[in-house]
Image (cartoon, rainbow, N blue to C red; front, side):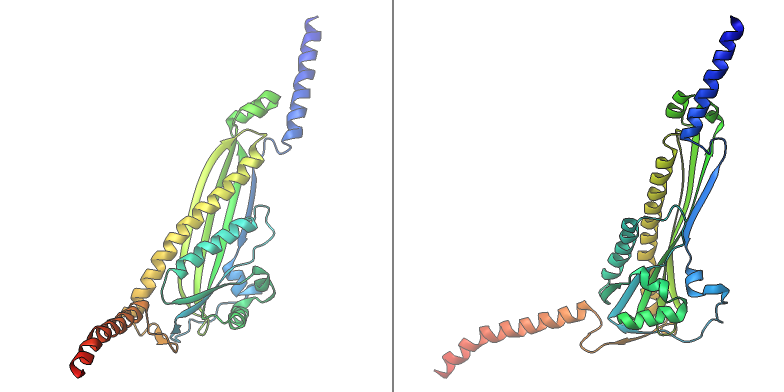
Length: 287
């Protein structure tokens, strides 16, 4: 009788472990997945070597026309969604539009970048869209899912549903590189880095990893946006204090800033008001 009970218990364990394996076939192993959109691979495809650093001085015509685009990614299993990528571009767009020396922003679809790679390809796209500088957003994300010591409880169905024995770790790097189209020189770049870790049950591991990857990407984008704002401010100071690094000219009908135009407008309004208040007195004296 005792042997029968032991045999029944062993069969039950095998059955339960089989059910758990059905839910989590990679049980007992760690999985590492990644996805990236490499700026270097886009600008220098097929192993091309970057050219020697040019000594050409960038020429910026104000107000600037800016193009922004997401560097095309590979075929990784954790690619950020279209909605997430668009939010990244909108954040970059907002930072540039906050500057009074930016005339307008063109969002360049990444499909165009797939067909025209290299620095020359970027310059062709810039001429097509009529922009002076291009901001390229790229990313790199690595996600590692592994079982912890508590994962031995996954041999039961209850454990697979209730025990958080799976560790989900993710590292994300988001970068915005701003290039002058004419010279092809990198003006500045703004990175954002996020790293996080969390635990989940075996059944929830796939959804938990997906949610964590997206949260990490959003956090890295937020940090990148803050660095982009600081980078733009630092670039403005360099332009003002180091004219040998960047030459600045002004387009027709652009006075170099809203403050000058506003002051001139206030002056005109003041003259007009003074003229209106003075004219009746002249007419009285003539009469």
